[in-house]
Image 1 (tube, one colour):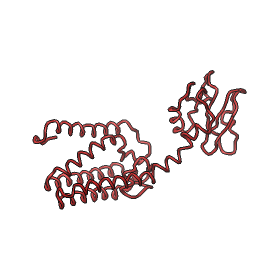
Image 2 (image 1 turned 90 degrees about the vertical axis):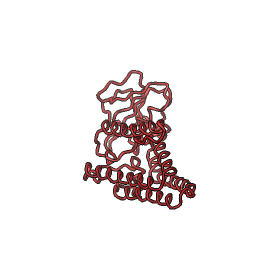
Image 3 (image 1 turned 60 degrees about the horizontal axis):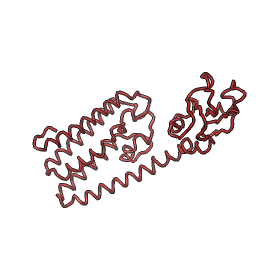
Image 4 (image 1 turned 90 degrees about the horizontal axis):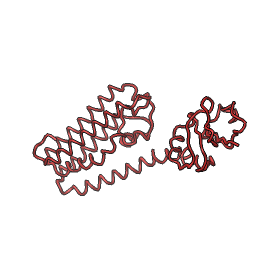
Length: 275
């Protein structure tokens, strides 16, 4: 950005990339409230759209810089990693260890630390610095002759990371949530022509996925115990009451023309129909 030797277009592109990175990170930090999750402090989801461009820039530096410039740039990058990790550790304090950890929010951090149950900032940073140092060392010791081997190594490393994260995070999450996504659509018996009311107490992910289902009828979100049920509604999805009580106990004052057609205690939903 500040070196006048590269073409102006390259400098402008670099400036836009940096502005997007900091702008997105600051906007996300300002917009998201603290909700007791550890990823409130270390959360790259909203800047992840810049990863392809950042990776290309990094490869260009790796391929085009001389030895001294490459070592200097890598040292600055490693220093920034450690500095920002220290800032996060000081700002979050004990909350890095006591907040709720959700694997799918920090898959890269978990992969680098080889720990899928908690955040380990020191191990993650050590893995990052080690990987960066190894690549730079190989590049400087072998010159341009090793660029092909480095490219293949990076591709293999990416493939290994993808397969590992899929096995440890993506696949278990998909299996665990299948029942509340497409599984609910099959099990509930709701058709595209139904007009459906979803209670606010129904699992939020179920309600969110149903937004993307194709209904020719209407869909509402409301609690029938204190909100009026639309006259057009003929199906309602409500949660179950406490264990040991019948599904009807959730809505004790329901009109006589509403009845429980089916329910699933494991997923905590009951489908009501209007006669």
